[in-house]
Length: 300
Image 1 (cartoon, one colour):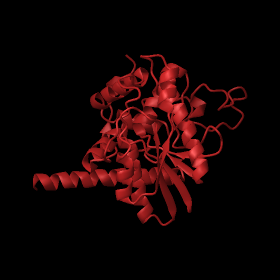
Image 2 (image 1 turned 90 degrees about the vertical axis):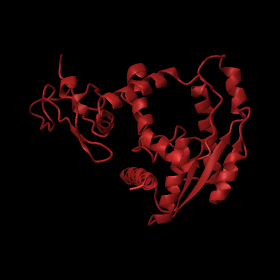
Image 3 (image 1 turned 30 degrees about the vertical axis):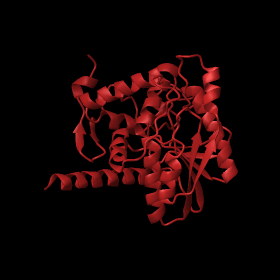
Image 4 (image 1 turned 135 degrees about the vertical axis):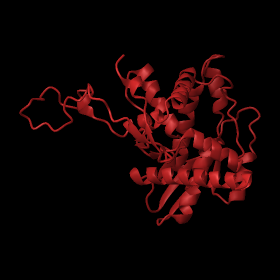
């Protein structure tokens, strides 16, 4: 097999995996229904380009009809290449809207030099996108967050917020007017990065915050990447855990009635298995069976 053939074979597997995982997320959470008008938030980054690409594929093959409209927010960052997205979307024959809103100046005015701008920038951007969704009559707002984003947010909330909380694959917006979906919820950032590079998407970097990336999220990402390389299968196992919540074996009294729990109230649960060895055999995204390091999880 030639090098070119190997590369093509590898890309085909990657593309099928991304489409399969996106399709599964859409099905599992009933993200798209007949006659939906989906506003695809296109930032110009690898994630949103991949999201649009995969949704265009499903639009062609799905047994239901739905419309896509790509929406980009031009935040008036200095040097923003305003011609890139219109040219790209026109070539694809994709319906799109470019919103011009100078949130850049607001962020620079409100946030002291050297401080992280992400939080305010995100809130301003979200407000503009919600307003736009109403104006264009969108029934769903599609965002490009992936599996790694979800896990990073989970640990950020645990470490710094004292909550077991992450990004849901589907939710109602803050203003209760929109349904937000994350079709890439099952996809890994590594796969998306490889796919984006192969597709040669015209990436537009975000220069608003420069090198002031959220330090806490950056540390969490580094921790997860370290675990991924040292403990194969751990990331997949942690993500699977977000879909297997057992409220009776946590401590949140609002989710489980511990007060009235007794041996006589027909409790059905897993019992006291806290000290049992867990099942450490999992499936990776490639469907390979991996057994985690048993020594690493046992009490020292």
